[in-house]
Length: 410
Image (cartoon, rainbow, N blue to C red; front, side, top):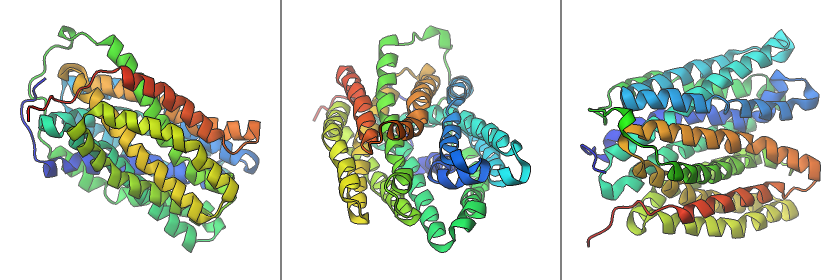
């Protein structure tokens, strides 16, 4: 599968900037779930309802993956990326400016749900088009590194969101954080929307000639394996992201400690993603992701056990750093395998739908499932058990899939 041309790594930065902004907006909701629950819902069930609305944002991801993905395959990667970026800006402003439950009653959670659905639609289409662009812009021997930009920018968004949350939590009172502090975090993203929009419009198109989609058969077996792989990666990502809420709700530690863990997740994963990309370019996709899956199964439960048994900021941060580093080694080669195996004419749409469906079902429900399991069982190790079960299933798919890395001749 030969691509028409290759772009220097620095020229694809605009894809990363737009992706980082979109995921900053999306993930900021997750990190401020406690405070958003206080703002938009009655106090008794605020957190659970807030997490449920976070999951609602995943319902429209498959639709966005289909609509914007097909647009990316038929019209071009760039128009699809520009549209998804524009929609996320509207949703961002909407969430930040919606009055609280105390001010407008049930209209507040209704508006919140609407804007979350719009966010989900935009991100559902974002991943397919931008990943297709990255793999098509890369030389064959550096596809892992280029595709790592997809996750590196997502994790950079985690890092920035964590820093913002940490600063706000340390400088504001709990009442201030509940009333307007979390809104300030959302509004920070709006300052860079014009720049991101301009940079995306300036990108070259990696799909200058599009063949009719009907000529390409969808590889059903591979799509099923890809669904299982993304099921594992999305569950792991959102399971680790839950640490922010877990530290506050389950371990009863301060919001400052929770956001410190979030900063560490973003930092370790941002550094680890390009390293993972280079490793899977050097050694192949399967060896890297299978090794990561095996180590994850060995260390997740002991890590959560250490956090619950011993507590303390040092233990939490050590466990967080380990789990976040393993995340990079799992997700980058998996997405690279999916992207470079699919035919160009259905690449953006298929990636978008596969990623959105698995993320919606498993990523979107991960935090609600984990919180519910903890409440039902009374056991703080429930997140580890859930993550291990899903990663084990994904690991079987990774074992079954073909190696997609180009064969080295030297």
